[in-house]
Length: 174
Image 1 (tube, rainbow, N blue to C red):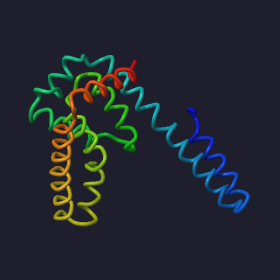
Image 2 (image 1 turned 120 degrees about the vertical axis):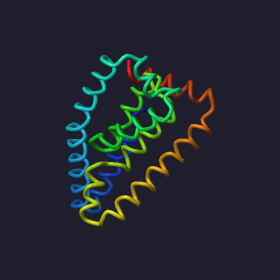
Image 3 (image 1 turned 45 degrees about the vertical axis):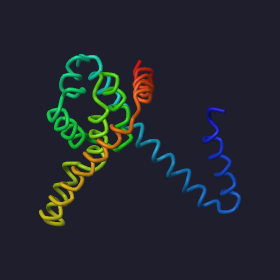
Image 4 (image 1 turned 135 degrees about the horizontal axis):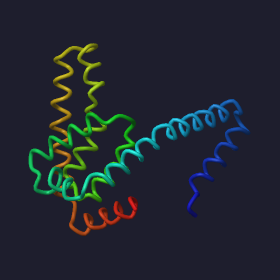
């Protein structure tokens, strides 16, 4: 059944409502608030990704971020992820478009890692609040960790898994 999780949540809310109505009401309000926030964030992301998909040719993406892009692709992936705004769930549609455009898996992993941990506003806040030593140390450790994780994942990913993931990305982006 496609919506079993949704129906399980409704049953859980009803059960909680029977025992503690105020807690169930808070849970529903929080859920609706999160859904509202997602509806404010997701449409602009999809519009920008649609424009990226239409305006930037596959060859250009492959040249700058594909298998042969080298250090240039790594730096561009870091910068794109660090400059991106929004919660992490916005990175996954972008990753699907990147995969469709033949961006290397390593660079997609770097992009997602940078989106999740290397945010420019967060870095500036840390610099101001916690000092430059902390901010620089955390940034360097994050960069090293992201590169290591991207390399390990890229190395462990089998060719048939790569084909399957790219096919899923193509199907999502149609």
